Amino acid sequence: MKAIVLGAGKGTRLLSEKYNMPKVLRKANGKPLIGYVLDALSFLEQEDITVVVGYKKEMVYENIKGNYKLISQDEQLGTGHAVMVTEEEFKEYDGPILVAYGDMPLYKRSTYEKMFEKHEKENATCTVLTAVIDDPPAYGRIIRNDDNEMIGVVEAKDCTAEQLAVKELNVGVYVFDSKFLFDNLKLLKNNNVQKEYYLTDIPKLVMEKNKKLITHTIYNSNEVYGVNTLEELEFCEKILSEETK
Ligand code: UD1
Ligand code: CA
Image (tube, rainbow, N blue to C red; front, side):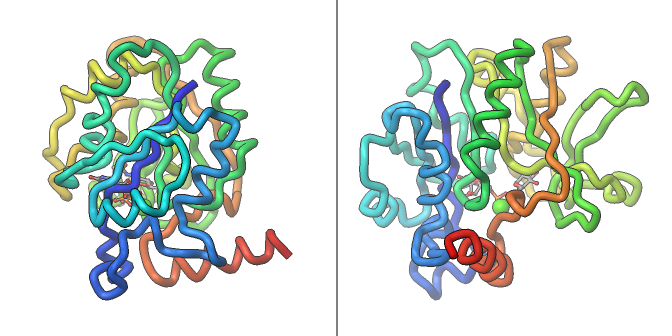
């Protein structure tokens, strides 16, 4: 398996301009957020991990040591677009790709591994990590049909009131078949509230094309808390410092 970690975003809500730092380099408990993600993915070879950088990318280049592949997304047009800019890197590759977000530092290695194992065992085209949370944050909602099959993700900002009531969330980790992924990223449209190309629109295409879309679900786990705001940074720091005690 290979992996892509997205870290091009600025982190407006973290006052990145004031702190003169891109979001994924903000530290929690002494280590940059993206460092936690890369460490949890250390069951893969570094050269098999592509990191997408953008805002203040020179700083990220300096901070990520090792043989990771770094690719620049010059304009941040959304998570789907961020994966699209890596297409050239994966031209010769035909196999599973895990996509993770650099602002979600709490995932454990075992969570990534379990998801990957399920993806392989079920021969899926796309496996989405989902979480059921009693008091859901503003994450994308997992939409299921009457047969309880996943049919898509709707971003919280794009949700109807009924969709917002769903307690199963998209928590930003996916495994995709590489060929399906890159063929279909080209079809994404940015007709949503944020005018972005959402990676989260890919699962719906998997379903529509009768390919195998599956989920791996975790329940009330702390691992799913990412960092968008200063409060969330503090929250993650608290969890990380308890873990290292
Ligand atoms: C994303 C998911 C949402 C999910 C949540 C979980 C999408 C569209 N939405 O929302 O469903 O519930 O994560 O945390 O994917 N990035 C880039 N380039 C871009 C945009 C983003 O590299 O053009 C990076 C950011 O640096 C960040 C990650 O992708 O590390 C996620 O982006 P962010 O804007 O934080 O997505 P969310 O709104 O949190
Ligand atoms: Ca985020």
